[in-house]
Image (cartoon, rainbow, N blue to C red):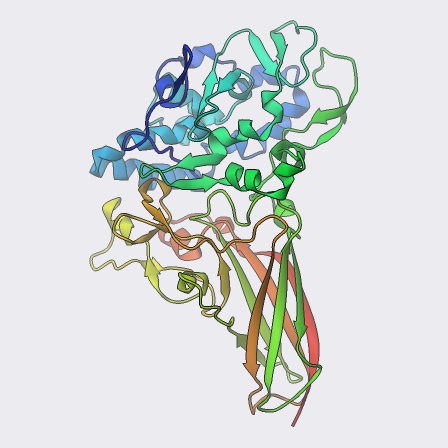
Length: 447
């Protein structure tokens, strides 16, 4: 999703030494200072191909990013000029060359400007440092030219010079864009912080080890040496079904093997984040939905939806599917129908458990617009190596067909809340249900 940087209202510009960082770089580097990715492709064929198909290579052109930026953020800035700098800052991470060139807002992707290069090869490999005191909101410094930075170094190529640096190989590098603060100084993206506070950081497992795995190969056509550990520029994340599949183990068990009509049956679902080094969902948390759906199926095939048992913590109402309305702040950004009172908040079956952290505007309205986020609600996500237990209590109804009853738990993931996607005309793939894990158990019912 589009990560608009929190600048222009409450944030300040950071300058370390003589180098400008963050917003101070806006408009300081014309497009011509940067190599086009197609120039890199001539020698780095595999890396280019991997990047081209990744979200890094499509950070500006991806359909939801385009709709959110041009359809909501830019329009909001037109209506309320105090958001202009904030909206410009979106490009610091999604179209960095446009930001550095001062081409703000850029033309839409259909115009095929150099903004379409998104997070390009030359952007990352010309980053000479970043502001260690403020690792958020594009806190890097780019110094384009013949010198390119990498984690291996070696002899200079025919096209550019090389300098070895460790900063491309550590998680702090990712924090430049995968930490973000809103204009209210609220962390609206904190993937790096989540990793830093978790077990993988303590064990020295960096972001790159999962999102840029190593494999045997050559780094360039001009280098005949084969390496065992060439970084793959795939940058797989939430948009890759293979990355989310199986990220959380799902197990369900009952408190008994047999029940009679009218009995109280309690089913426990065990959820273990065994794969991710950060919370799930992470990143664009305002958009994402992870929800648990449990149902019982009797011997005749009749299906009974089981709502989750409440735990009673503050803010829990936002973690249980309901028909509550939200996103009324759209009316501040775009034209909406008369009488618009928001959209359904969740778009999932009422009673399903939702793992999320809600975002709120200054007026207390739940929003999917991170640049409009003044506060955060309860954080009910699943942390790295964390186990959550959810119980579902079922009074066995009279109409249940005696015999075996299968209780099935499905854990679904969505990139974007479906009512929002439908309202804004976002392609269905963005809000489609994605099965992360499932489990079932069978009990016997007697009359």
